Length: 104
Image (cartoon, rainbow, N blue to C red; front, side):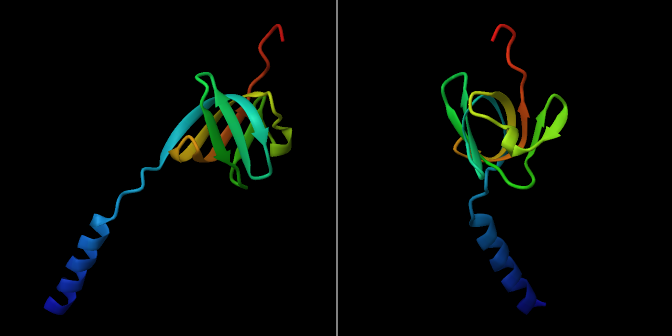
């Protein structure tokens, strides 16, 4: 039993010393400034630019219906939910294209 316990304690100690990844879900609201096949950039109202990587799991919606990434255009206003460490390191989970404001 002692031969089993020592490596277990060592492994637990080493793993607990590693920094925990601080991945969070971050809501992003703003205007699309760039769209590529792998990422979108969104400028928020306070001037920050969020970079959201997109993949096959990213859901894009407009008017309550699911659409493709190809329907996302520069200048559109979106609400997005990203998962990651910071505004420049996010993976897009959901992107909702909002209707243009009246009078535009």
